[in-house]
Image 1 (tube, rainbow, N blue to C red):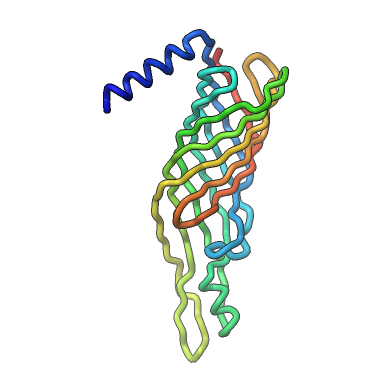
Image 2: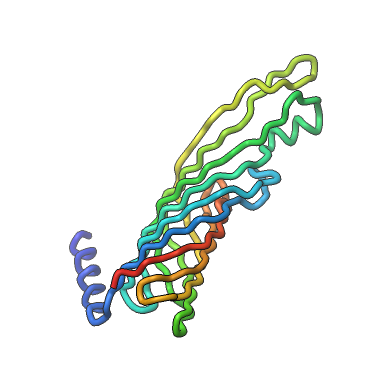
Length: 201
């Protein structure tokens, strides 16, 4: 197995040896949220960040290491159920934070002059940390007690689209959007981030 991996890496390096390889570091800051569904009721929009290290193995082919994080508030399913059936003293929202580290492959579907568009997917680890309210029932009246915290990590499949415009030889501005697919929370962590990039040539 190790020999096959080594042969694959050598073959890949030979195939792309004729191309000049650039490294692009990107930083994005913008909004993050999740589609409304089984777990996230009435999700709010929160603040998200992303850092990418993009290695151009060819002009249109990119390997990327990505770290994305952010949080947003939402109404948990339990909160919604008790609010419909009983009186509640205080109704705080729940909150979820996402932390994702991914290895991705991106392909530039458009590369015209200074403008480019890339689509990518890959595999990563997504950690979500949740804060949710705890209640105590007294005579059919639910009283807020405190917040509880829980978290877990799982495999996730990131999907991303990027628009970029080169403003100089080394600087690029643009916007990226993406979402994560994972077993526990089928679709979560949708983000839309304006970003700036620096290219090491």
